[in-house]
Image 1 (cartoon, helix red, strand yellow):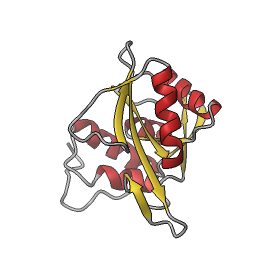
Image 2: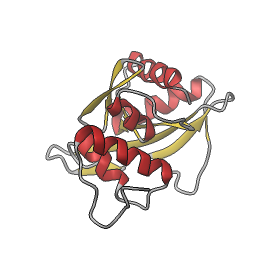
Image 3: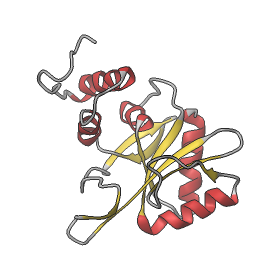
Image 4: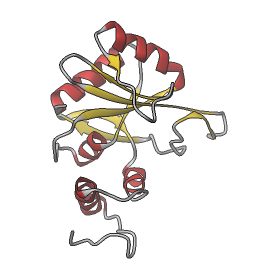
Length: 166
C-alpha cells in the first residue's frame, strides 16, 4: 500500500460520507508527517454507523473480505484484485464515552491529526498510538515506530520493557 493510495482511499471514503481514522503503521507515518517504511495495507477505524455503508462501498468496487482467525462484523480485512488491503476496525461509544461495540478504542484516542502526502487526516492521537504499540511484544518495525514517536513527541520508553538501542 502506497501513501498515495492511502490518501486516495481516505478521500474516497470521505467523499462517500464515511468518516474514518487512520490507525496502525500509516497512523505513525501521518503523525510524523512522512512515510517511514513500507506498509502491506491500510488500517482504519470507522464508527459503527458507517461500517455497513463502508463495507457496501468496498464490495461495490471490487473488494472482497479475506477471512481471518479474528474476523468479525466489527473487525475484518477487505482486499481488491490488485492486492490492496484495508484492515477495518469498527467501534461505537455511548453518550458517556464508554465503548459499547466493536474494537475498544479508548475514548479520546481518535482525536489526532496527521499528514499523508501533505494532506491532513484524522488518526489516533500521538499519546495513544505510542501506548498502543507498547501494549504488545513489538517487532522491529514497531521498535522503529516507537523510536520515531519518542523522538518527535518526547515520550519516555517504558522502563525495562524495551532496549532503546535495539
